[in-house]
Image 1 (spheres, rainbow, N blue to C red):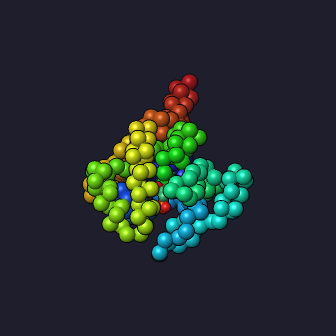
Image 2: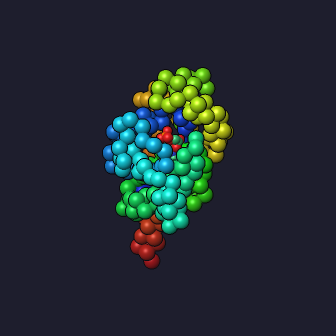
Image 3: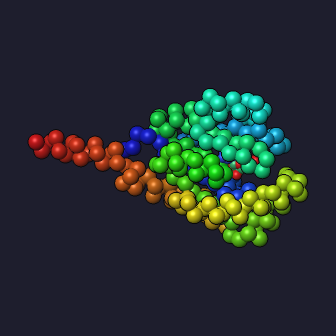
Length: 208
Ligand code: 5GP
């Protein structure tokens, strides 16, 4: 079948629970590679360099951009975030699916550069529920929560440019929806065009 992996771009407003949904999905699909982003944000408690993020100084982050080391990059809530290009490309070439958990500006850059990427956006059941989840998390100060909530409206506007929407009512349901979406995406004629070409070529050559 397809030799190249699927590039899955997963976004949603802060507090929607996209990280938890993704974790649930990855439990069932441990063969999918999670792209570890670079960021200038300070680590939160329990976050590990190289596992959750590559925590970089602004200088090192800028150097990555200059060296064309990022597939996409964007500013979010006063910090820089970006996807290291090389690891993504290597995995896709090996036929391994890669998931990027990134915000919308970066996701739209990926859509532009990689038209075959599958863009999935996670929505909360309502804005009120999003506010409740973000405040309840307790990892950010009031100003950060306010900034992230004001970003959420803008982000949900961009959801219209994504391929699919997952509503995170419960983590299990949302992870199931994601699984079905990925499965459907892997059966589109667009994704399987190389495979179709091969079989078509064999059919043509066999009957000559
Ligand atoms: P957090 O600081 O809460 O970990 O992430 C803030 C936002 O940055 C989230 O929406 C997250 O998905 C996004 N983000 C994480 N890594 C990247 C990245 O490499 N590129 C972009 N554009 N956004 C990212």
